[in-house]
Length: 269
Image (cartoon, rainbow, N blue to C red; front, side, top):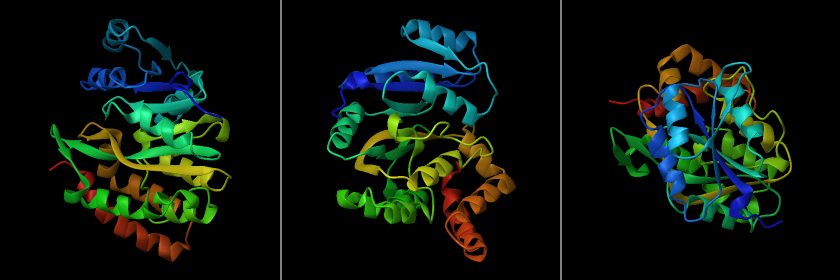
């Protein structure tokens, strides 16, 4: 099947009153290939409603259980297209994001997800991988997936995930028909994306890695990732649980200590 831009939805997951929400939406409106844009939220308020109205976007309200996994699963189902990107409200997308991702998945047999390289936005500045240990570790982990013929090999998909979570969640384009529902498990807060990749790595299909930098992931003190990394016990417990899906307990605890060291670069200085 050849997918078109009209087969894709950007579901912007909005929460609270993020000062970056409108910047995210503007970046989606500037895509060189136009798909659909919606807003999904479990915290409807006048701020989000005003932005939705200003940009003529439909707002879907999750009236079910609260929590990040519930919100992402809700957005996954709210989008009525076969392709989906869960756009995080604080991030921005380069104009060629959708165009490039479509080209890649249309050349791939049985794609599950496609994801790109990215830069970080710290204190308003773009940080490339050369100056950030965490980004360097993740880029190294993804090296095997640069070879298209390895992208659908189960062992390769799992070994890529076995040392860290190298996939930037907001960069991911989901091919919905090739994925289980619900995708995200509610017991995870920080590692719910890593958990999802591990689950689908066991299934047939391809992890399509696009090494082009197609988005910017914002690191700031109010982001969920930064808050959970600041909560040492919560993050460490989830990481160990994930490592145990790949390794014996002793190795899992060792890898967790090493990964925790690289994660320090996710904190704002």
